[in-house]
Image (cartoon, rainbow, N blue to C red; front, top):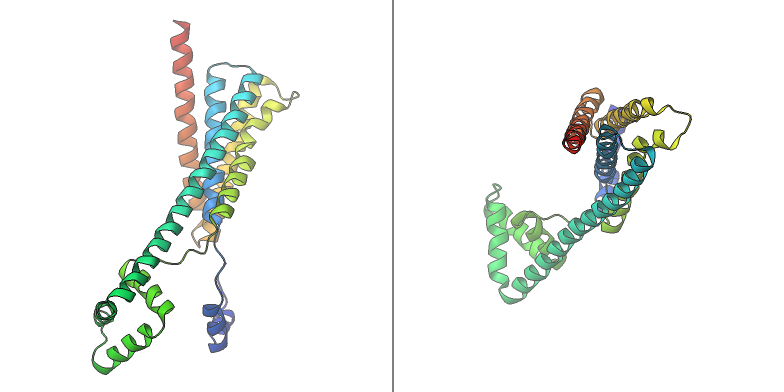
Amino acid sequence: MPISPNDLARQHEPAMIRRRLREPQPGNYVQDAVLGAVDGCVTTFAVVAAATAASLSDRFVIVLGIANLLADGFSMAVSNYNARQTLEDEIEKARRTEQCHIDSIPEGEREEIRQIFAAKGLQGETLEKVVSVITSNNAVWINTMLSEELGLQPVRISALRSSVITFCAFLGVGFLPICPFLLPFIPWVAKFAVSSALGAVAFFLIGMLRGRVFGQWPLRTGAMTLLTGGAAAVIAYVVGVAGTHLNSH
């Protein structure tokens, strides 16, 4: 949502800026939720599409769908956890390396700080004062080297929380395409259509949510997410039809 001019001005008052910079900002887990939700819906809808094209029974659709939902959801959560943890380990290793360099060759590290800020346009007495201030605080010195030299930023996102959110979003949204096959009052010929409709709505709403969160046009992001998810389902359906045709021969 756009911020009003008054709120924007209030957020940039000296006291507010000081507090915002002093307090650690909460991690943004929207990316994990969106990724898990889209992948979960694609995974199970692809199974439903392939199974329906192959004329498998409801029981097979449910078993295959839930098995893939749990296995792929857990796999994705573990992969997300490992990716986040690897980044944290990389930053921690770089932090130890920079500390070792500062302890071993402090003048060389000061020269790196000097050249980094000289490249930003600082020079003369101003440059030397900046170098002096930064290198007088060990934590600031290391963090500056991490961000300016290595392009690494402190991680504010918990790897465990990220993986849990991914898994929950994967299961929650991924279960939707299976739902019609659990309801006996829906005719078999209509179940795939209902599943398709649920999948399409899920894709579109996920895309719209992503657009609103990141300040993009919701209808556009919704349509793009629907298009990519639908493409995966079409591919799976074609594979299912092809498999059925081969088996019949």
